[in-house]
Amino acid sequence: MKNILVINSGSSSVKFQLIDDQGSVALKGSAEKLSLSDAHIKFEYNKKKTDEALPAESGHEEALARIFQFLNEHGLEGSLVAVGHRIVHGGEKFDQPVVITPEVLADIKKLTPLAPLHQPANILGIEAVSKLNANLPQVAVFDTAFHATMPASSFRYAVPKKWYEKHGVRKYGFHGTSYKHIITKAAKTLGKKPSEVNLVVAHLGSGVSMVAIKDGKSVNTTMGFSPNSGLPMGTRSGDIDMAIIPYMMERDDLTLDQVMEDLNKKSGQIGVSGVADDIRYVIAAADGGNSDAQLAFDLFVKKCAEFIAALMSNLDEMDALIFTGGMGENGPETREAIVRHLGIFGLEIDPKINDPIIGRDGKEGLVSSAKSKYPIYMMTTNEELEIAEQTVNTIKK
Image (cartoon, rainbow, N blue to C red):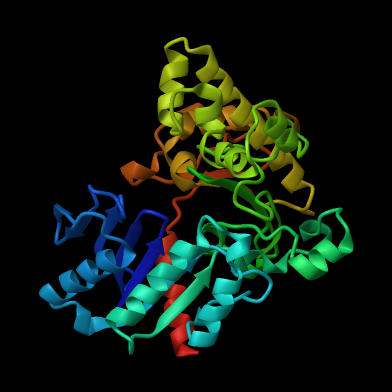
């Protein structure tokens, strides 16, 4: 049995899965609170879950060392054929997964200014694995690569041309591995080839984005130059009037970094509701009469509907609207509330069908009513499996 180790390195965490050549997960877990006194790592193996402390202030290198030690302890390291890394930003250079060489790593580092919150952690993951096993092939799978097919009319901003040509200021888009997985699944469901499907897909998680897919390719998406753009999210503001930034700097005597910190980590659901960055708790608070929580929910679903409508305008025909991501998979009330704003387009959800469709219960499928002009589905995504498959295909090439 051959295994791929999928690594998703965050600023203070490392999520990992060991996926075999049949697509089954042999091991999964996460290292959390890295660089803090209570750093720890969770393993789920053979239906047994463990949670162990890491040495205080352990970083990515120590976390990955423990992961490789676990693999060795359980006789799994010998079956490891490659490591697939989720890399947030590939810029315009990387429109496909690529085997990581010193030259590729140097190019990934050059893209750090485009994703300063994510790219450094991704790089730490690559470097840590290189120290642990220098002979093990590593593959970079880029969130942005899927959107490389967008036309210039979708990805260019109406800013001075030199901003784009000299500094790469444009829309890049993210959540590419999720969308790639959904295309494959949707094609099977619809009885079409992946190159034939026309979809609007809403990836609703702590990070939120949507995409218009025409003939199996991304033609427009909501996230732009950075993952903070587009829709409001758990802690991110999404699109705002750019004049707000200098206005708040002046009014509250804030630095640019402080304003960006507020927009990235104190806005979205938590900013409006004051309750939580998880919509489940926001909905519960709204049901309990919290007006700010109700506003956060109403604002979010209305914005989602507006973006879906805008993305539909990129298509000549639509095979389906698909919800995915943690919130999209497990929030039937959120799906219904969004679609309620889209009745003018002939979209309609059937609550009796929609309500039981919850991803964590192992359920997915059609949620629209028989009267809906277009079918609406909830489909569970699997970014780790997609990264593993792209890693295998890249190694074969």
